[in-house]
Length: 240
Length: 289
Image (cartoon, rainbow over all chains, first blue to last red; front, side, top):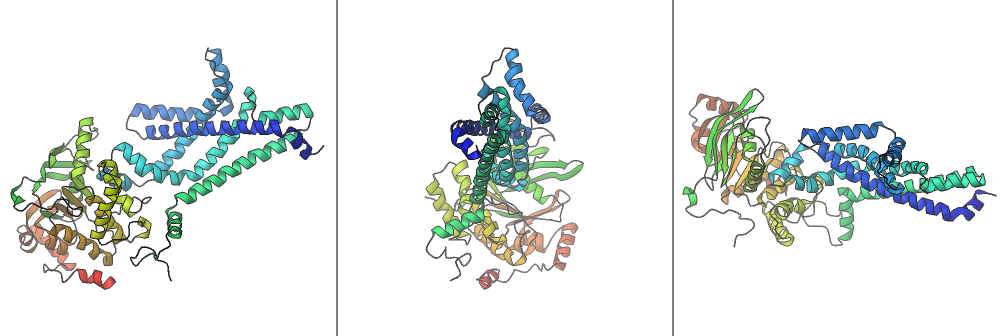
C-alpha cells in the first residue's frame, strides 16, 4: 500500500481536517491581528496604566508556551467553572498568543513612519483617529507585510497544537490515521504536504499584496490602463 | 461665489480688519533653554510677514507654535476666533484644548521644510484628503478644486503623480496646494526652500510671490533675504528668542535700527545679499522649460 493508496482511501477525513485547520488559522489570525493592533495602539498611548497593562500582556503571552496557554484556557478555566468549547478555547488561546507577537509587529510598523507624516496630518487638522486611519496605518501596512506573513504562517502551524484537546484538525486526523493503520509515514507526509501548500498560498497572497501596495507597481498598472500618451507635462510620458 | 484658487481674496478696504493672528507674550522652553521670550506680534489680513534671523533664534519654533505643533508655556495665540494658551511642560491638553487646537489648525495651514507629502497618495489625493475627511466636502467638488490648485502652482496635469515621481520643488508645490485646499485664513511657510536644490528654489518662491500678490495672509520663515524683502510687507528679525526688530521690509532690511540686525545682515551680505531687487526670478523657471 503506497502513499497514493492512503491518499485515495482517506482523502475525505484528511480534507475535512485540513478545512478545520484553515478555519482555525483564519480565526486565530483575525483575533491575533485585532488584538495586536489594539495592543500596539494602546502601547503608544499616553495613559501609563494602559501602556503597562499591554506591556504585561505581551510579556506573559510571549513568555509562556502556547500549549500551556491552550491547556489553561481549555482545562484550567473549566476547573474554575468557566467551560469553553474546544474550538472557541483554541481560537482564544492561540489568538491571544498570536496577538502578543502581532502587537510588536504593528508597533514597529507604526513607529517606522516618520514623525513629519504625523505633523503633516495634524497640520490639516486631522483628528488622532483620522491620522491613524489615513496616514499611519496605510503606510505601516506596507512595512509590516513581510513580518506579518511570517506570523500568519506561524499561526497556521500553531493550530496543530489543538490535537491535544481533541479538535479534529488536520494533525488530529493524521495522528489517528497513523495510529489505526500503522502507516505513520504516509499520513504525516500527506499532512505535511497540506500544511506546506497552505503556507505556500499565504506567501503568494502576501507577495501579491506587497506588489499591489507598492506605488511603483500602481503607477505601471495605471500606465498600462491609460492608452493615450501619458499626461502631457514633459515628465513620465512614454518614450516614443 | 469664491473660486478655489482665491480662498481669501482680500476685501477692498479690509486693511483695518482685526488681526488674523495675534501672538501675545509667548514664552517657550526646551528644557532649560528659553527659546521664545515674551514674543508678541499681530498680523492683519492680507499682510505678508517674513521672519528672519540666525539659526536658533526661535523663528521656526514660533511658527510651529502658531499652528499648535509645539506647546508653549505661557502667553496666548489667537488665530481668527480661536485661542490657544500656554501650559506647563508635561501636562496634556484637555478635551476642550484639543478641539481648540483642531479649530486653530483649520484656520492656519503650515508647509514644512521637509517635504512631508503622504507617499502612499498621489498628488490629487494628497490635496483632497483634508477637504474630504476634515472639512467633509463632496469628493468630486474637492477634486475639481484640487485640480485648479495644481494648475495654479504650475502642476496642471500631474494629478496622478506620486510624490516619488515628483522633484523636490514639485513636491513642495503640491504641499502648498495641500495647505491652500483647506482654505486657511493664514498660511505658515517654514523654510520651505531650505531642503531644495538651488535650481528648484525659484519655482517654489514664484508660487509664494503669486500667493502674496493675490492677498493671502502669510507668515514666512526664510533664509532667503532677497526674497524676504521682495515679498514681505512686514519683516520680523528674531535673535535668541526675542523679536529685535519689526517693521516694513525696506526699513528693517535696508536701514536696520539695531546693531544686531546690522550684523546679521552684514553676515548675509557676504553670502550674496545686496539689498537690491532680484532680476527676473522667473527667468530660471522659464529657462528650465
